[in-house]
Length: 190
Image (tube, helix red, strand yellow):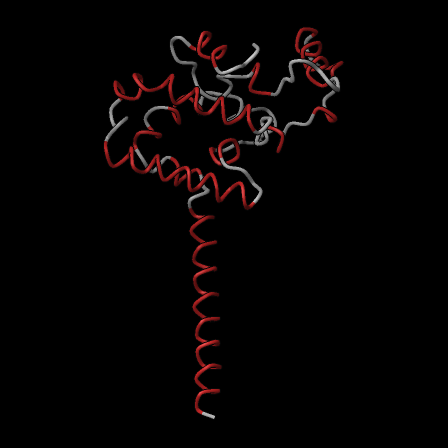
């Protein structure tokens, strides 16, 4: 009888610990998925965030704002967890002071941009598509060059397959020196 009670007690305590852990894990996932968290490091606040505040993704006629996580963190849970694990590398570099001055940031900027471009190309600009959708675009309301490019990219079987980042590097952050060559190196078609 005592062994049975011990098993049930262990099971109940394990379940409670599991629920607390799961709740804490999800809470921390959400807390680290906010713009305020992203810019809590001066490296982001003093560099890319300043640039972002001057773009259409920050301020526009409709009042819709895309924040850091909207563009850089997937919405789907498993992809979000993978991205958060990858972000541990960024924490390492924070501790090491890899980009803790404007000069160090500028020196690494092209490498950082290429990393983001490759990731966006690999995911077919998944985070862009949370807000932007070819089926919802009215090509007649776009400038003719944009409409033509979007129409080409939208065509089924377009070769090479284009995605948002192929043409829209630098849409929320300034482009680093040497970006054109780097974009070609990573397979962007702009």
